[in-house]
Length: 583
Image 1: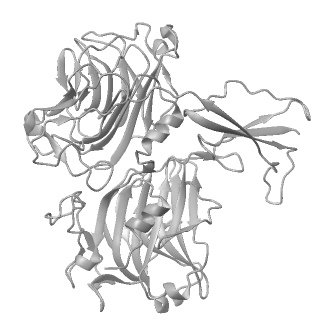
Image 2: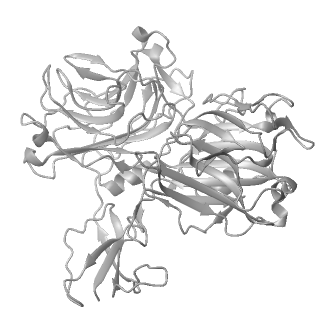
Image 3: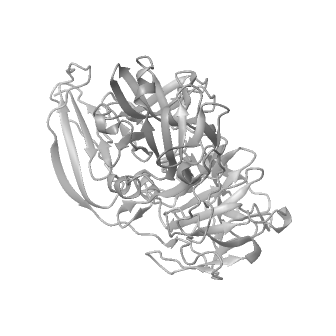
């Protein structure tokens, strides 16, 4: 054998590491194999003679598996879910449900700017902490929350994590911080000068410290979307401050390389913050500022440095072992006024049966000047002529560098599609990319040849110069069947941003696309990975979009619903939450 590859199946079944032998059949030693998660582990090893198969990929032999156990690691020293009470409940305390050490509840301060929100990251009947965006006067935007005791030892390794829903980017806004007498030992925040999320430490506790920053890879994160932020401080398990590092993770992905603090500032020392953990503000020069505007949810702390695998697992935000999702956009033609000019948001609030408005308030989709109408014999729907009709609204509605789910209820017009040329792509729903010439994500039906049609879900990543760097494609397993014509079909795309893996050609992939037709998962995923994160911006359209530099790709047919969730749904969740009879 000339090469070997191994992977820990129970940590990340798609991540593999290749090691070449010095000579044929020479022994190979791999040191420091460290599982990212505790508990039972399976090590899989495959060997290869490096010969290629007919597709040009390296041929690997059958896997040999070895089982072992890793001792359980320390759990959360603090966890605050902010599901303690609904808006208007009058409650001012969020319970700490951490696993290790002393509990420190979070207390809501400055009541005018704080409260509970139905915009909860874990879905229906979940709540979050609302901070200050209900107040128009900046001088009054001083609401925050804090623990009732010191919950993190900032002198030793620690990890902090939170979901943030930012509604303003005109100033710095802190999500979490650990203050001392003069400043904050760490701050997890949005920086208006860098236009990035940041995790920082200060070298010492004084009025003019040196700020040591781990910066997000990308600028200008979208507003009014849920983003998972994690900051890791790692002392490497020793007392040598020269190898201490910090690193920011966004949606489970590391941002740049770990920052070696002593290299960034010779004055650095790992000092201990001796004040309460702050939620929604930070401290510098002895004063508090940088108050957060928006929502904060699902805060957790650990008194150790989480591994990349553990951060990714936390990003899944499991409930009873299953990742959660939150409906963040819902346009419903069936409840929109017939003959109107807009597809209205759903009038339903999953958390408030008495409400008559969708809680995220994205605004209505506006119909095009021609080719689109709200009508229908069986129920009101968005009827599109396939040549000029569409509806659109300003997006994005999710942080697409993480996991999300999009679903449409569509009825194809076969007569109009049959008149289209082979290769025609009829876009059902799409989010424009920054250049407007491609779609960051899209659901569509493609005419492969006369009478041969296929549902597809895909994503496009752009290079710095605006050209296409990579695509992810998840087509249906079979062609559109007779029972899918002129009837309602739920077409759903799931993008799992936590599915980092190396493909068969050795290319690192950022996430994976998955297509569902009704409740049936489509397993045709030959090119479903995306090699770089991508965030769309601008128009979110129903019935048209951009692809291969062409804007249009109009849909001939009807649309009943367009829905978007934060979080990657499982097959069971798609069946339970989406695949249901049309209204």
